[in-house]
Picture 1 (tube, helix red, strand yellow):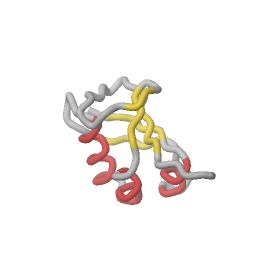
Picture 2 (cartoon, helix red, strand yellow):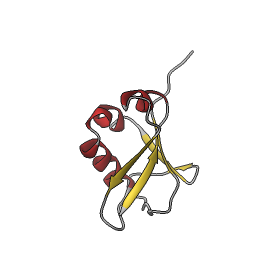
Picture 3 (spheres, one colour):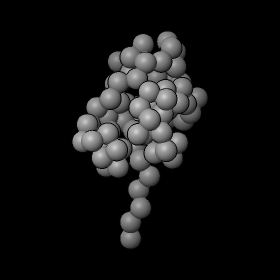
Length: 82
């Protein structure tokens, strides 16, 4: 299945300003599977993806949570500030 992932901040920058990428994963993929596919299929995001979380339908998910092709998925990079 194809999962559409919205990018923000450094992830969007790493992809040259692109704010949406697609990844192909097997049916019944977990969030960890999607992050792995993102790293493999979009190498500029590899380092960032390993330190980021996924939000699905506006809520953070764990590595074992399932992702549906119809889900609204966003890559949330680490945030720092003061």
